[in-house]
Image 1: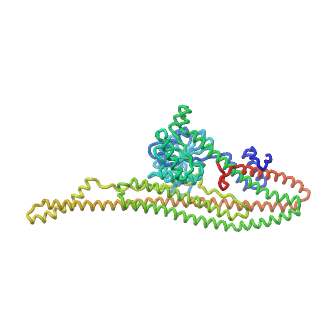
Image 2: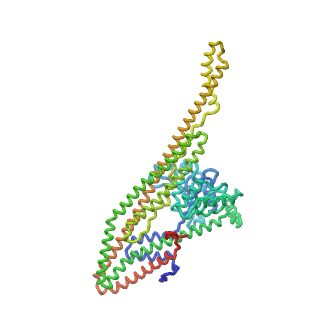
Image 3: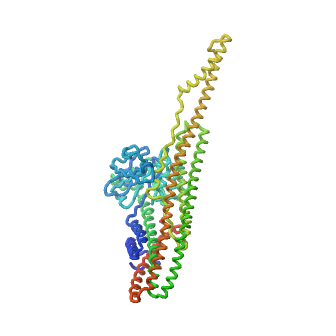
Length: 620
């Protein structure tokens, strides 16, 4: 590998070759901790999986879009909610489908996988014997497909925001670990408030988001809808590209091999977006991560090799280097002894975060429940129960999503606070606090809002009035008989009408009050169920964040102390080395240092050539 010029572009050397050299240098130095970290980076270069989440509200054509994108009939398509759980589609040499079931009792134990014939995907639900009476977490499907063979992993998600569907927080739990999110909205109408809220949440969790306007073949006015949606995005401050697509035209174009239809389907623009914003961004992110790993490993290796070389060349300078290393090691040991300090900061931060997140969640849900109950007090819930259910589900979706966003932001802030404890050993990388690929996928399934008892029919209402009027007629009729009148006379009939009317109105008010009480109770039960399940998921999410932060910073502290220990040991051994071996050892150390220095220069040049956005982040 040649030495690059200071301002040159990265040399045309494959990343894997550079990583292999770095791994070999770390293995020769006995630094298995660095070898493990570099091998993870090498695995990422060899297998660059790019996860694309397809999301949107109910009945926006998500499954049909995935089928058209892959040119396969794999996702169930229908007029109702056909996608109940996420479906993860990846490449495989042979078609294979697995049903992933939750552990017994929804515990934290291992999930169960059941192999299912791929043609049975659309006919299996939670009541199927294959589900074994447990909750279905997701589908994992492998198919031989050209797009998936390039490392793309598509995730078809359930519709959000509809009564009885999975909550948006389930889909949002997949978003932080995604490389791109495609949010679908059909061309039948303009973007709604729930769609804009969902887009805002997705955009905050994933930098690569596109809004796809689907079903353009069904609606001739789709261009007006496209322009109106663009205005809505501008007013909402959402910088999200819009792409108009037609899954039906795409399917016809592939079947007929018609390039004109393929162009009209809009999928060409979509592929260009995926190439520029997903593949290119992922490649830049991979190069940046590899450059950081190579540079960090080179610094650790150079510390031990350089200290030993100084001691080998000049024992007097070696003694001074030993003293400096002993001082540095003392500082590192002090940092290691102060492990309790950063761990205490982490533990206190997680505790505070758990309390704040739980309070924020409960406050949002209590506000929603209170607002819904106030609306019920002013209206007849029996007439508007479907509207209430739709409003309640939508507002809870938004509340859970905002709570997830707040958790993510606070976790990043906590990671920065813990990183301040390591300022003495230089800047350290922040850990990844995003949910894992299989986290938060469909766990919130708290049921649906219970139905109200239907109002009585016309015949029952007539009987209520007649029963009330009977007493009035009988009472006034008997009294009027003393005046020589018949039992049924105008006076007794009028009294019956008045008493019957009052009895009917009283019964109507009583039934309305009963419906309102039942509706409030149903709302409270529904919100309590959501709070119970969402609270459990929130705790699990925080436990994962805690473990990620703890493991990351423990590794930083251990690697720093290990490097200083190795440097001190090498320098001390070199100071007592026989004179005859010094020249031979010095030549070997110089050769190893040249390799390490070249690796570091390569990493510096590669990192300097990467485009950066605000705050030094890698730009697409």
